[in-house]
Length: 353
Image (cartoon, rainbow, N blue to C red; front, side):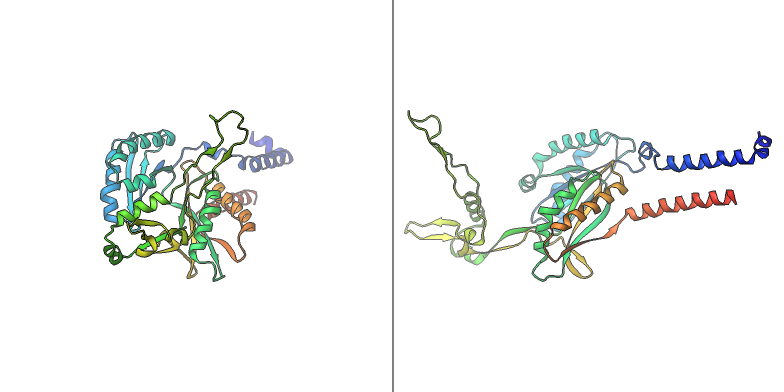
C-alpha cells in the first residue's frame, strides 16, 4: 500500500488535502454536548432573614434546612454560607450523572418539610431553589460618572431593567444583584415611642393595615335593580408610594380627636433597601450583577449571550450610565480553545514540513 502512494504522489496529495478539508469542516460540528459533564450538578437554596446576624441565620435557618437535606439520593456534600446582612445560601452538590431536574424536585419536597420550622420572616421573604453552580461565570458592572446617579439609583435601575433580562437568557442559572434597590425606610425613635406609650409592633401593624392594596368593588354590578344599565368600578388609593404618604399613617386615634402619626415617632426616607451588598469599579461606587451558570449551561454560549444582551440594553440606558465586564471566567476557556487550534495547526505544518 505504501509503494502505491509513493509511486503516485499527486494522488496522495489530493487524498491528504481532502482529509484536511473534511477535518476542518468537522471540527466545528463536533458534538461536544454529548460528552459526560465533568462538574457535578448543584442545587442552590437561597434564604433571607432581614435583620439577622450570620450566627442567627445559621442556627435558625441554614441548620434546619441542612437537617432535612441529609439523605437526598445522590447527594455528595453540602456547603453553606451565611452573611451578616441576613442572606444565606446552601449549595447541594450531587454525584456526577445525577439528573438535576429530579434532584431539584427532591430538594423542594424536603424543603417543604423544613418550612414550618423556619422563622415567619424567612417564609414571607421566600426561600428560592435554583439549579446553578456555586462559582460565578462573570460579573457585569453598571457605573456612572454623573454624580446625580447614586449607587441606590443604579441598583434600582439594574434590578428593574437589567437583572430580569439576564435571568431570562439560556444557560443562566442564577443572577445575583450586588447592589440594592430603593426602599422606603422607617427609622423609629425609641424615646418618642416611650413618650407615646407605643411599641414597634403597633407601628408595624398600622403600616401593614394602611399600606395595603384592596379591591373596592364596583357599582351597578349584578345583582342589580331592573333597568340598571351602567356599571362602574370603584378605584381607591391602595399602597402608598411617597414619603409624605407614609408620614401621615395614623398610629393611634385618641378620644379627644387628636392622632399620633408615623412622622411623630419616626423618620421616613426613600433610601437603600440594604446597606451590606455593594460593588465598586476603579474605586467608584457601582452596581454589579453576578451571573452563575446553570447545571447544563454552556459557559461560552452564556457569556456571549450576556454580552450581546448588555449591548442591546445599553441603547436604552439613561445618559451617563455605562456597563463593563471586569471579570469573565470564560476567557480562560477561549484561550484554551485557541491554544488547541494553534497546536493542531503547528502539528499539521510539521507533518508537511
